[in-house]
Amino acid sequence: MTTIAHDGDRDIDAPSDRITATIAEFQRISGIGRSRIYELIAAGELESVHLGVRRLILIDSYRRLLARLRAAATETRGREPPMGRLVSAEATRAASR
Figure 1: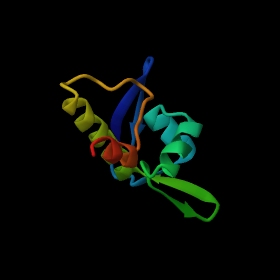
Figure 2 (figure 1 turned 90 degrees about the vertical axis):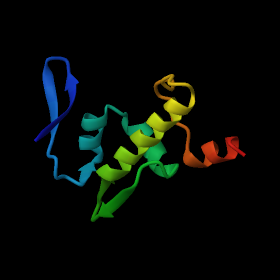
Figure 3 (figure 1 turned 60 degrees about the horizontal axis):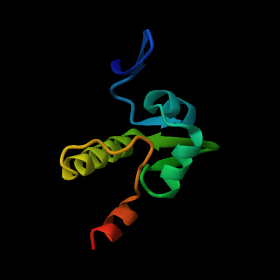
């Protein structure tokens, strides 16, 4: 198990070898709300797959999203982007043209 976040007095653990998470698990792991998760999926920022009736988030796509957000923060002279303001890759490309 790898501790990925802290929630008050308890650690939030995720198996380090997991490659997917259900929506509910991903909410707990990431702290992102259900509606925002579906928005990120629709925008192509998070990848998911269906397995039967379950939707699973690919954990690597979350890591890539975080890396893009960190890179964007670095490009804006080290300032952190405002919380909750995630810009889609398409909007970022359009703004840089």
